[in-house]
Length: 124
Image 1 (cartoon, rainbow, N blue to C red):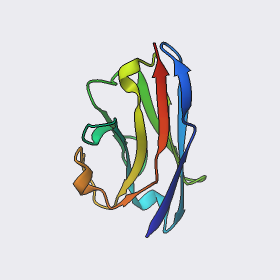
Image 2: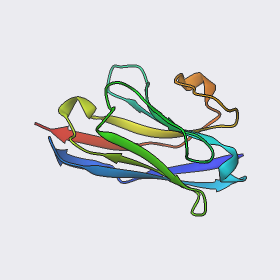
Image 3: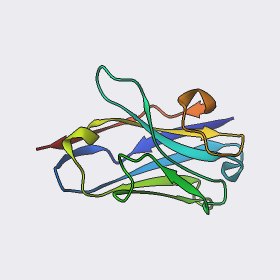
């Protein structure tokens, strides 16, 4: 089992940047593929990005491609989400998630563990 805690959310103006962190504890962090999802009020949770166990393979939703970057530090048991050129439509609660099975998974149901989330608000 793994426990996940997100941090780094906040209020930022459009065009600004934020870096989210997700610290893991518990079982071996590098045995999990990691993902970021977000959920805006009244909307379903949507996939943002994922990274493989080694950090070599990444995949992004079209809505964030070229603006967001996922990375991980297995020694620190942490995954990051660097968000640049933020837009008001990026406003949401952001969650990190862990998946024990390999491959690209963009649906929340395929992830085994979740953090509590962190709020990101982008003002226009």
